Image 1 (tube, rainbow, N blue to C red):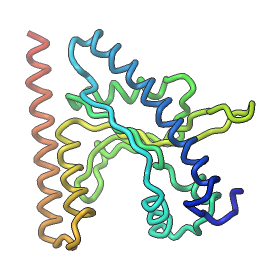
Image 2: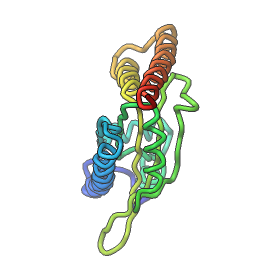
Image 3: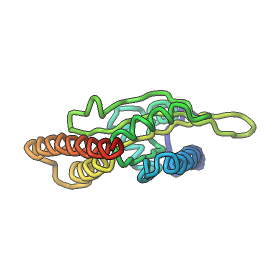
Image 4: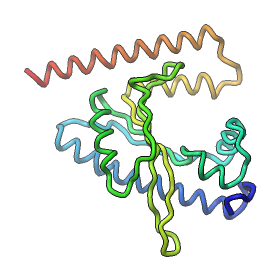
Length: 207
């Protein structure tokens, strides 16, 4: 199956997407438990929201073409890591480092890769913490391992990222170099705001 060209109308493709959806649901369930436990322990919503999605077939194919991968199942499984995506939005910047440590220790979720775009932002100004993880699922009495991406952001980071994505990728017109630079500057401003807010919060809890 792996070397077979992808046909998004085929039952094999639908079955594969079911595995990714199962992995997504498994991760979300565990994050929901963590969300409730952290609220009880910290006295506030450390995790403000959890959203998740499965990439559309069209989006998967477009990404493979953009990355110049031949459109077969082997390349999809090995190289497209964000078919199942989970986004965790935190209240404060400090909450991200706390969550990173927790996610590393979740049973039955193996961390394959981490990218710290908070310490090392993308050129565009994008900031977040990314995990590529692997989840074991049962299929015909055997374990299969399915990858997913987890993104962790603050509410401020999420606002910028959502707006930037719509401006750059959901518009029919290409964004100008000047406006791209403005978005990069606004990302830095938002990061400063994030830092100032957490300083106020730290001062409050130490009184």
